[in-house]
Image 1 (tube, rainbow, N blue to C red):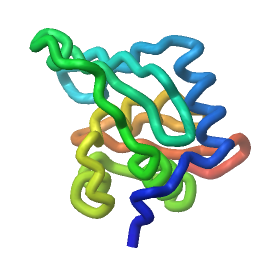
Image 2: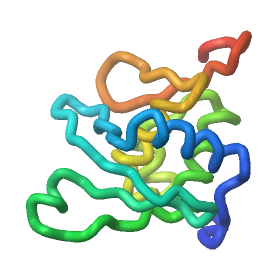
Image 3: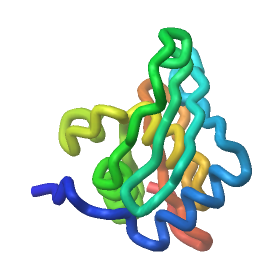
Image 4: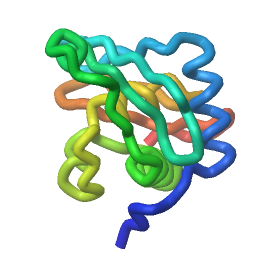
Amino acid sequence: MLNRAALLSPELQQLLRAAVDESDVFYTLGSSPAANVVSNVSEAGFFVQTEAAQKKGNPPQRVPAWMLQAAWDRLTQARLLTNKQLLEELKVMRSSVVCAVLARLPGVLVRPGPGIALVYKPEGGQTP
């Protein structure tokens, strides 16, 4: 059972802040990349302004910590995470932005091929 009230681990929070400091624009990983602007990283998650929402005049939306932490935990433990797993198993409905953000973290690679898949290969680690 997922703890949907979870906060970001200090490690993940630090990694996310560093990625946002480098560039706050994260592009989705599909065949039609769309810009997502990430802001206000905190232990509770972050806010994202999608291209589509901005065009409609909608404000940034919170991506809660549990979505990010559950995705990061699965990726670092299993060394592989797909968008489909995020949606169907972890019930992360902001899967596109979560994948886009995780793809910029150290040790994370985007696996080529159909569908969106991330591979975690820490320094000196094996690729699945």
